[in-house]
Amino acid sequence: DAKTTQPNSMESNEEEPVHLPCNHSTISGTDYIHWYRQLPSQGPEYVIHGLTSNVNNRMASLAIAEDRKSSTLILHRATLRDAAVYYCILPEGSNTGKLIFGQGTTLQVKP
Amino acid sequence: DGGITQSPKYLFRKEGQNVTLSCEQNLNHDAMYWYRQDPGQGLRLIYYSQIVNDFQKGDIAEGYSVSREKKESFPLTVTSAQKNPTAFYLCASSQGHSNQPQHFGDGTRLSIL
Image (cartoon, rainbow over all chains, first blue to last red; front, side):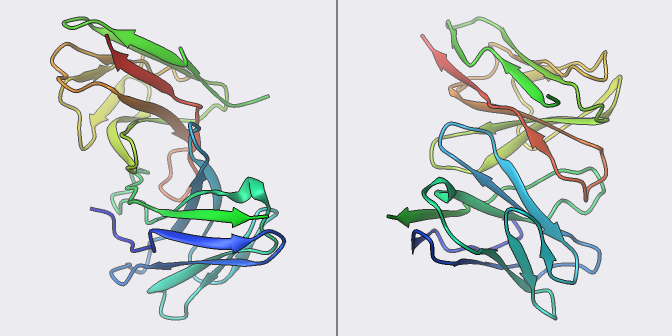
């Protein structure tokens, strides 16, 4: 079973910031938090990952709570191309690299 | 450009027939994965391989088989034992460490005739 909990869907207006939440209350000390997104009929795309401190890249920012039991993916200015299913994932702890996907959050971006 | 190539994009299978889905990567990644996705659902792991000539079953391996004879190739065979093969199949690769991102192909959509 997925070790994360996300809202099923969210809406945003174009050009506005989007905050996508994720709860992972059973996270262990060595679990990284990964985010992927998937557009319709395409394979998932890596977005960002982090361990403890906040992370930024060209696509998004990842804010991790101090107790690491939750995190938030931040899209600073949503575009229509950001409409996708966003998955928050904790890779399996056996160091196999296995990703366990939940249902994710479907993000709708309105013009 | 480096990446993962899956072929074909669409595939049709007759009852009782085995079919093989191709996955090739030129990223020099050690680890490769096969996932299955059903409509409206997340991905589920079928098989994975962390190194050439070695692979392990994922969560839903029954009715599938794989081989890893070359680092860049990880073909998946959907056998006649898989009773519900209609799905979207995705291949991925990574450097192998659990904290490295996985790179995905564009998928193969398999349907039953």
